[in-house]
Length: 290
Image 1 (cartoon, rainbow, N blue to C red):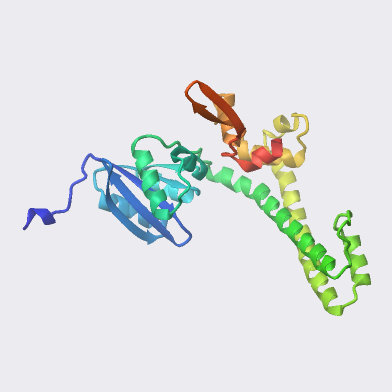
Image 2 (cartoon, one colour):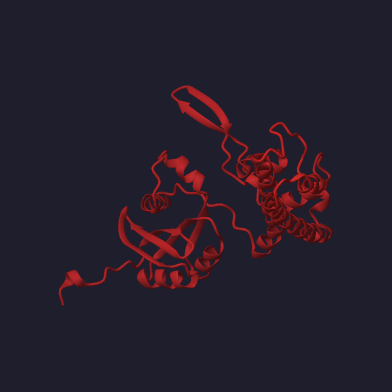
């Protein structure tokens, strides 16, 4: 057999892998000693990708990285692949490159991983992820409700039912007044349709609020967060679910970095200029404390 056709051996070698995660597929790039040795695309099934990596690079030291999501991370770690999940914004800042494509991202992350210039974010436990679902979903429903209110306002503004300088907040009472003044039956149908969605969202938000009260009663960190000036029941739930007991932070600087509240810095020679906060962190915590 021709020696050139033999499968290369990766025994004992360090393989650096970037995974571009999509809803249905994973795009994978592997780098060895600065050279791309394999690129492929596979179905977005964590167990399947883990098996492929172990099969393609037997007896090698596998290091991988990707952006966002924790299920894949846990499956890779289970089979002995050392993986980190990275913050996308920090990667772009590191390389100062505004040209963004999947292929560029994949090679960029794998290369940065190889030279040790990537830092992974903390991976929450499955229990912590489940706890966060309540506050995060509540916030999403609040945003959807606000969008529905704005749609009602804009529909009524278009036909002159609401003046451009109207300052009243959208409420059930205001919607009722608009229905009574509406000149068209079809407009009434539209307003009623949005109003029913609004009411349904209110009902679901109320259910989550009740569950959050129960969660607070069982959380040993609740009193600590509530003791901070300006932090109410909802703020305490957000902070506790996102930060836990804060044992993940060894010092204040790590906490500031996690929230994105550290200033960006531009240095040139002897000149150092501080700019706006980086915003490369947990936006939910940042919004709550601000």
